[in-house]
Amino acid sequence: MSADEAPLAYRLITGPDDRSFCERISAALAEGYVLHGGPAVTANGGTVIAAQAVILPQAVASSDAAVANAVDELDADLEFDGEGIA
Image (cartoon, rainbow, N blue to C red; front, side, top):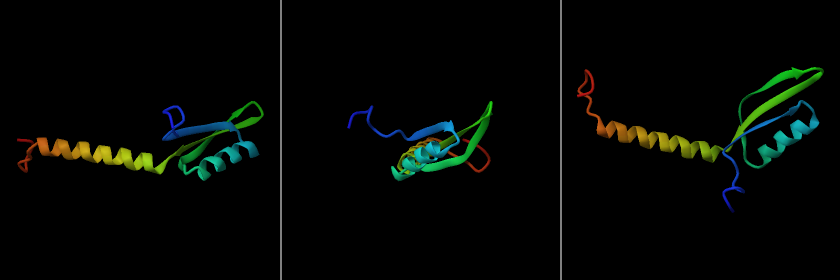
């Protein structure tokens, strides 16, 4: 699978708040995405436009692990004497 074909870690799905939009969200959930936050809606004239962010859980776990490793490395480089950084 090329980089262009790899699933995105984050997607923002937008469109008119109709059955088609709900089908697109349902398809993303079936592909392993999970909802990220609540939906946003706005009106465009007489049409309600919805937006929903979805993320792949494994991408978040990998990102969280990278952050945790970076923090551990910073902690190892710094010495804390109880009052401040020494």
